[in-house]
Image 1: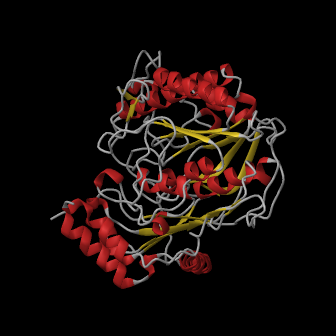
Image 2 (image 1 turned 120 degrees about the horizontal axis):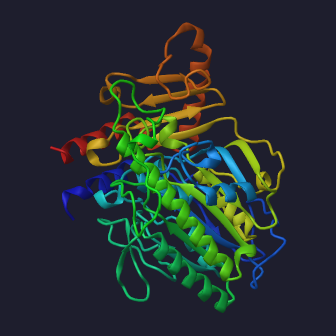
Image 3 (image 1 turned 135 degrees about the horizontal axis):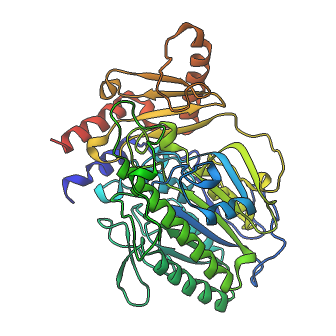
Length: 473
């Protein structure tokens, strides 16, 4: 094993095996059920269980029509939002691909499961935690994947029944199950064809399915058009700077235009994908979940704890469970996906993770819900190691930089998101915000304690820093 694996080895050492939220066991019908269960679907599949279609875009922020963006052309996502629930305050756990995806699949924060950086650079989960596809497979589901997985575990816990992922050095590629040919997931027509094949196989098997479809767009490098999609290509004259981008010299607007071209291509792909689902006859019995793994690949977005990096589109259409055009302002996180899938599919499962099922919200109910949301960042690549933890409530956001020397000596950041939604004015230590600062600091610390954050231990934090410094020398 070469030196790039050091973050895995060292993080295994500093993560002392505390597993408060990590005890998960599949149990029989007579077993103990600790998660609440809700019968949502009025129309079941032939197996009497709801199918799950999880669609993940790569590096997509709120630049879609249904989230109020006037430049993006996203009629298919807009329609999905009109037919389901569009979550207005949805967040990833960590604004980097691999850590974020580890939370989607395990229901755990990256500081709990160990995937604190990019998989193709040597970071990995420090234990073989149960994952969404593995849990569903044990419950009798046919499982499939198209495109990027980008999470590594000590054992093979991502063995899908159908589909294949590429080598981690080329995470945007897929291997077609029938021919073994490599395809780029920017070819959204091919992605839809592959998904259609999976849907038909599932229909023939009479088993429920879980399919994870991963689009590489709008991840860098931006490609304006692939296979004639999108048909109308935007140029720099059609766009303006994104509002979260740094003040000062005008950013490269052609990059912004290219980003939007990638967004528009995703939407076309989703339309083709859902057409295949309808043709298979399984549309009415399938829960459709659309999310992104983090915000846009621009400064002050991806690889930060700023809102543009951690806030994502998050849409769910669940059979028989959602009303048309419903929007929710509740704070939700990708750690909520696993408990939602388990409760919504009525799988008997003992679950002890920090997330919550969204089923009651999907049903239009008003459960007592969380008043704050927490996110984190530890690393992206080894040279981008800058551990921080963040919390926000309805109005204010606090970011704690665990190593201030890596952030120009700034230990804490406090933002008023009502007056300063793009976080340009740090209010920390201003007397009039002292009570807010104190409250959020206390709440953030409690979250770190509750979730067993290993970097609460100063010695472990410094050990991890020394490992990263050695790697980039």
